Length: 106
Image 1 (cartoon, rainbow, N blue to C red):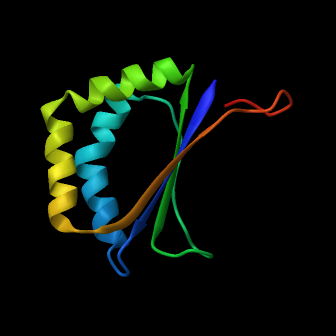
Image 2 (cartoon, rainbow, N blue to C red):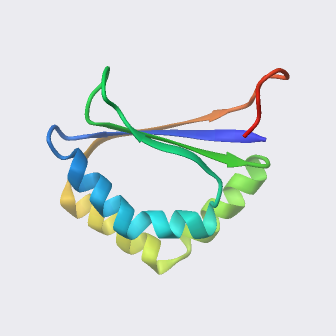
């Protein structure tokens, strides 16, 4: 198993707009194609205006196949365009994590 840790930084005071856009347009698609969300969070302290979400996959190949299927959906392209046009984000980052042999698994 691997976990895809995604960190998005919004322009100051634009976090609610990003969350609303994501919830309406991206969340249904990601649930359909990716399916195993371990959590979707906004920060309260530390780096503000930040969204963090985690997705579990059986393997890197599983992740690539699921993300490719989602990318082929025209609705995903429409979401990406809407997000870009809104100009809500200043940075995006993702990390692929592998659990240790003693890590609790989701």
